[in-house]
Image (tube, rainbow, N blue to C red; front, side, top):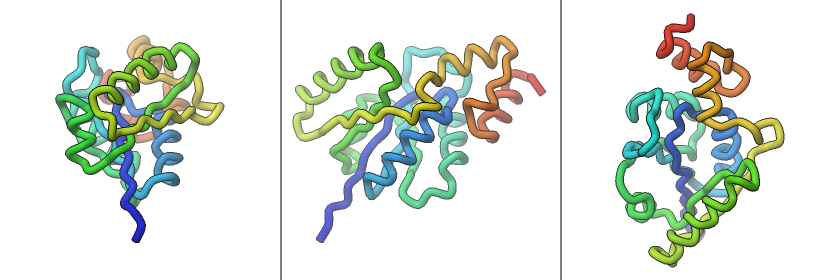
Length: 163
């Protein structure tokens, strides 16, 4: 009997980008289920509220059978445990991401030794994309359609009154 391997990919996803999508879809090939965990309690000033971010992520992955989107607040590792998962997926775009992510993984392992962190790098064409850069370009009037799905692009334009 095989195990039900569940991984959680957490983030604010404000907005969810093609880089996020790439990581999630590749993780979905490795695990029975991937839970996209949209963080509600964050120190970041978000463009979209939690419900909007969850809805956008759900629309992006609506045709994927083994990808589920859930909003959460509180301690990530408690959420992971509540979902029956033992794996956390983190994306690394550049060496600058590694230091913070390595510290976070170490802290999580110290607090919750039964959980693992798996680092995935996005495909080359998505290496430079980050939600904060997409948000900044959009707020300044730039076109971000090459960095997000059409649904997300439409939501950004509607939110900012761009179209």
